Amino acid sequence: MQCNNFVRQLDLAPSPDSQDPYFTDVTAHLRVCEACRAKMSRKLDAERAIRMTMESMAPVPETLLTSVISATRAVKARRSRWRSWTAIAASFLLVIGLSASGYTYWKQSQTEAAVERLCVLSIRNHEVYHNPEFAVSDLVQISKWLSGRLGHFVKMPELLSIASATGARRCVLGEHAVAVVNFEVDNKRSSLFSFYPSQFGVEGVITPPKFEMGYTVAVWDENGVGYSLVSEAPVEKIKAMFASGHMRN
Ligand SMILES: [Zn+2]
Image (cartoon, rainbow, N blue to C red):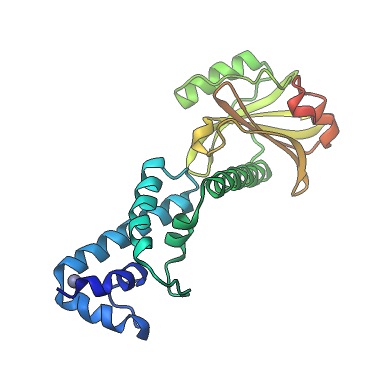
């Protein structure tokens, strides 16, 4: 069997019908060898799964990462010389190359990206909609109404003190139906979105009020309930409404 001669190229080839002259031998071999075709297809499936996970910004399951790292470690040992190829599937190598600290860093930057995305979604929603479906100022009534509207208990935050609301509505943020409470701070419009932190990949996140895209925004996870706040009031004004030291920094 000549399959062993193709181990390295098989690992690097971006597809079974790559036009890159470097892969001519292996693509020719793939046309006649069923075993290597199966190997190739498993490799492409793994790459695709990783790419999709990375794009979705969901955390990569530890098992997937471990399986890829251990699988490639065996392959790596056989490589005598490492050549850099732009044709290499970048996402695949990115994951192989991740050390433990690299993985932590990647996860952290992923959370930052998730917070950023959530802020943008919240700001866009705040900009577009201002008419509450339920125009009531009492927060207890709002909580009840939203709970019925969303089919699960919608809790008001304890860290942020809102004296009274201008109303509430249900809205779609990204792919999820979430609750929104509208209120004013010195006549400046503000929207407080409430959701499950896992829906947006912001579990355990605490992002104190900051200025972003012309608004004051904040994101936090309060005992398993996620909140994102968009306000037209200044950052300092919003910070003063928080009970927690974390959120005032
Ligand atoms: Zn073969």
